[in-house]
Image 1: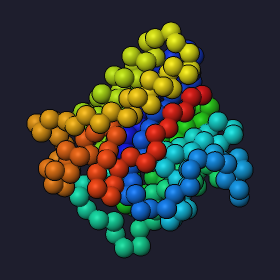
Image 2: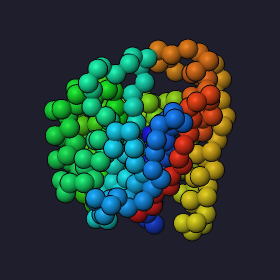
Image 3: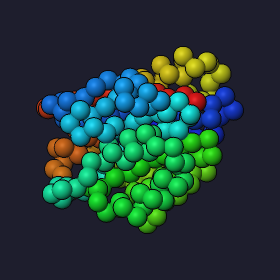
Length: 227
């Protein structure tokens, strides 16, 4: 995933709202969201290259999502797949807090990542580019390819769209449509607002949109999850 917007216990109607985009190379083989044949309690898309996933939910209400941390460096040879972090949580029965604490000890084995894992007890965040896990207080959050709530333009626009959507009295169908529209925003940030993540300015511009459409790479899935 490259954009994840979260409303955690921020609205009396929904314990959780997640609106997220998965950005990936178009050539990477992928299965669409479905229940997994070997793990029928898990619902999510599947990376057919490494076997993991970017976002999924289990029938007991546990969920997880991951983004990469963009700093212009290539993954180390032999590094583990970040998608395995989500799949490992959903396929097990470990609670979110315990799982994130365990990943904190093995996070050096993965390229730069941001992991969100939740269950009925709460939502937990961990990055191997930051010190230690944290439990999220109720509120609205945004995550892209930097740390949680880094003030990138598409993160700030997405969080505002989520707040405005929740402020309306409309039902779940309208909320889903509103957030899918926000995830489809192709607006490019102005140069002065672009982050500096070790890539060219041209690519910083391309990747500043919520919905990315670049040669060979872009947004491949838009997902809204309501609990």
